[in-house]
Amino acid sequence: MFVESRFGVTMKRVGRTEWAGPCPWCGGRDRFHVWDRGNYFCREGPGHCGRSGWLDELDGVAKPTPEQQLEWRVAALEAKQKEHERRLSAIEQMHNCTDHEAYHRNLTHHGQGAEYWTAEGVTAETIYHYQLGYCPSCPTAPGFATYTIPVMYQGKLYNIRHRLAKPPNGGKYRPHMSGLPAMIFGADDLLGDSKSIMVLEGEKKSMIVKQETGLPNIATMGKQSFKPEWAGKLAGFGLVYVCFDPDAHAQAIQTARLFGERGRVMEVPFKADDFFTLHNGTADDFRYYVNQAREV
Image 1 (cartoon, rainbow, N blue to C red):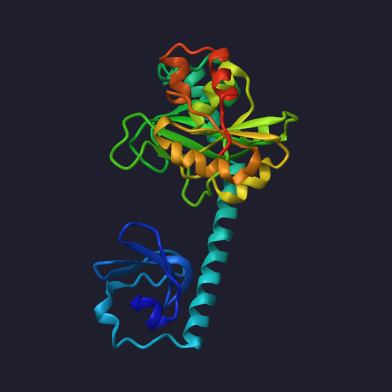
Image 2: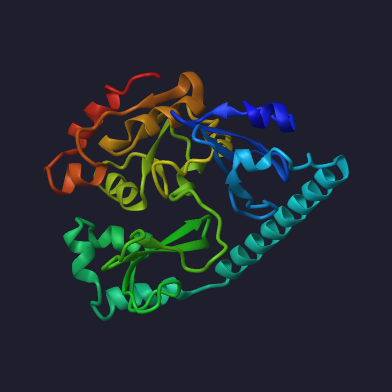
């Protein structure tokens, strides 16, 4: 490949016509993407150069010098450190935030949004346990009413997930403030003494499964958001059951593989919350799929 021979980097195929590898100008691991038709770009982000264009335009471009490469790598490390500090500051602000309590009062004292959670099959006990609420105007999507889910761990608030009542194009969830890192929902279940735990896709599914079965579980913010470094947090469990939506089977396998021989993939015919709320599934029915979960 031209990029490999010209700039001395190693590219790997990531799609039928797409390759990825270190950027010849700013480094990284897989931020530089090249397509068979000859176009390229460096993914934008902290410490990334963001270059794009066509490979035939690079023929006369000088290779970056070792000094330039070192300068870019230092800039990338500095940007990464600043991002880390910004996230720590955001988390500290969330620890001191009490907005979730006001949103919960909207639900329990004023009845705002209560019909939504009831229609979703959430019981009053679950609403109280998770401090679910209602926000008339989302802080990060002003003007949009939301149904709120606090993300807690050991009594501390890490985020408030805002589920938009009428989501526009671009997703139905918003964070309480910018700069917050992805978090595991229901992480207190990691502290239990159960021999197994379940990984679900989405907070609502986690709450419903816990409500209906009592099974310990955690949830990610989406089918592709389980970070490999999180696998170590589940090291104390003999079995880890991954239960994603029916259309996310490949992602479920990928996540289960992070746990080696302990990983199991569940194949439930419906979304975990719909299994109970729309299809009248019982706890025993759900446990059948737990017992049928297979190794990967």
